[in-house]
Length: 157
Image (cartoon, rainbow, N blue to C red; front, side, top):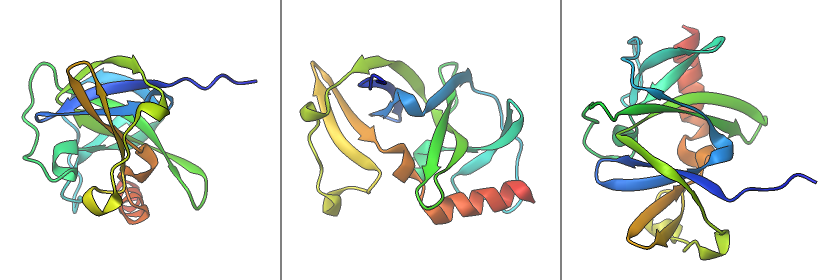
């Protein structure tokens, strides 16, 4: 029987801390300037090579309606997997984080749900520990099906 871990990678974007389940994380890499793509979506910074594929890099701050990221020595790209519900197909992309903090263990019963009326559907819950407050992301919901289709079409061009 496969053991399900309750580990989450925490990262910051602006002054907000987010966390994503480690099962969705492929790699954390130093920031590299993505190659520009013509007619890219506003939050798409460009593309990078990841193993045998070209993947989009998302300016997470812009996607979340915040001020565009400022790049520092702590800025990194977190490569994540997103599963398209309709097809069950895995889609990889890079998200820009101002900094990656750590990995922490959290039980879902300690999450505090947020009503969808007050948050985007990709924010799964709030989680508080000691002096830290995290917004837990549902990676599969961060990008709508339309966003994923648009990103795939841009890359294929």
